[in-house]
Length: 200
Image (cartoon, rainbow, N blue to C red; front, side, top):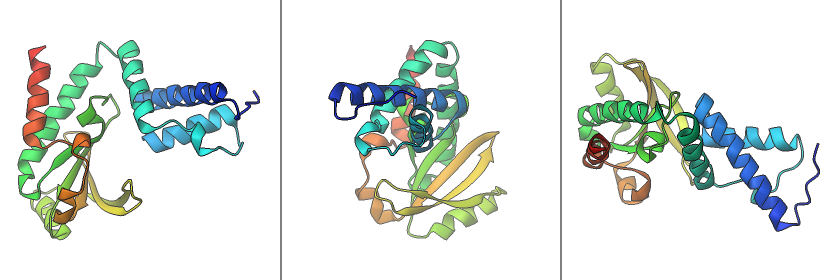
């Protein structure tokens, strides 16, 4: 195994790039989540060595590598797949409009591929209202938790809709004012994204 001298900036940059590239391949080919792909890539390159935080690439760096990988290997299929998922997300957001839905993740940022799921943030004063709404629609869901960037657990309802994975992350209504608007879009914004793609 190659021994890296982590005190040298160029070695660290090279290794960060390698990890980002390998993680991007896992995301594009397998649908791995960013955090999981990052750890797997680092372990594959470094074995069980202790990993310093400055060696791991940011999600933004990995996202750029995902875009490059898709442009190189999936240019003939990825755009249509993205549009398919965005249209389905728009249908769901219209159905769930009373819960202030916002689209996040790969379907929003344009890196969605064959294995990508739809992630929606919902904002409501009563999480049980969402569960009851889904049950009234005949949707069987599973309950889990996702971690926010601040490490806070968020209740998530997951189900299949038209053979696609959907995850509803339930936030309090107050959280709506404290989220990063650059990392999400409402239904109007999503419809604009779909329209722009259709114009190409």
